Image (spheres, protein in one colour):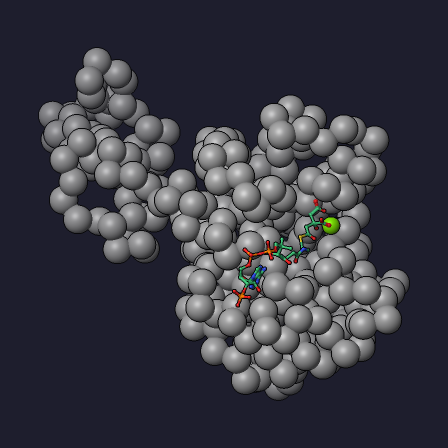
Length: 291
Ligand SMILES: CC(C)(COP(=O)(O)OP(=O)(O)OC[C@H]1O[C@@H](n2cnc3c(N)ncnc32)[C@H](O)[C@@H]1OP(=O)(O)O)[C@@H](O)C(=O)NCCC(=O)NCCSC(=O)C[C@@](O)(CC(=O)O)C(=O)O
Ligand SMILES: [Mg+2]
C-alpha cells in the first residue's frame, strides 16, 4: 500500500516551487500542467516539469504529474512526460471508464521498453465522473486511487461551497464507496483556505472518519497538520494492540468473539485494528503503546 496522506500540488510553471517541492515531506508531489497553468504557458510548463522529473530530487515523495484532458493538451503531456518516468499521472475530469482506457493506450505507447508502468490516479470532479466512479476505478489495473475535486464538482452541480461542506457529503461518501469496491484508495479534495489551520484539521479528521486515506494539498503549511490527522494516534495503536490480544485469547479458548471494555470484538473490528497496526508499521510508529 502506498502512503498518500498528503499529495502536494506544485504549479508546473513555477520553477522555484518545482525546485523546492521535495523538501516538505509530502507523501506525493503533483507537478501540475492543468488548471494551475494558463493555456499560453502549457508548452513551457511541460518542458519545465520534464526537467524537474529528471533533475530535482523529490526524495521519498511519489512523483505524480497532473496532465490535461486528452481533448486539450493531454496527448502531448503524456508523450513528453511519460518517458521521464513519473510514478503516476493524475488524470483530471475523468467521466467514464473509456476515458481511462484512452489514457492507458497513449501512456502504453509512450512508455520505453522496460520502464516501470506508470500508475494512474483518476480525479473525480464532474457529476458523470462521480456516477461512474466505480467503473473508472476498476477500468484498468494501473488505476491506484480516486481523488475528489470538490471545487469543479460543486461548480458543475450548481451547489454553493461552504466551510461546513454539507454540500459535498454525499459525493465524498459515494467516492469512498466506489474506491473501496474497486480496491483502490480514496483521496479527498484540497482545503483551500491555507491560513485556517483549525478548519483544515477538522476537515481532514472528517475525511479520515469517512474512509479517505489522505488529502490533496495546495500549500506546504498544510502537510504536517494532515499527517498528524491521518497518522494513527497512540490511543488508536494501543486500542488496536489490545483488540488483537483479546481476539487471540478468545481464539485460544475456542471462540471467534471477544469482549474488550464491554464491547464486542469480532472479525470487522479485528480487521480495522489490523489496518491501524499496518499503517503504524509503515510509519515506524509500531512501538509498544499503552492505551
Ligand atoms: C495557495 C497559494 C497561492 C498560497 O500562497 P502563499 O504565498 O500564501 O504561500 P506561502 O505559505 O506564503 O508560501 C511559503 C513558501 O512556500 C512556497 N509554496 C507555497 N505553495 C507551494 C506549493 N504548492 N508547492 C511548493 N512550494 C510552495 C512559496 O513559494 C513560499 O516559498 P518561499 O518564497 O521560498 O518562502 C500557494 O500555496 C499556491 O500557489 N499553491 C498551489 C495552488 C495550486 O496548485 N492550485 C491548483 C491545484 S488545486 C486544484 O486544481 C484542485 C481542483 O482540481 C480541485 C477541484 O476541482 O475541486 C481544482 O480544479 O480546483
Ligand atoms: Mg479541478
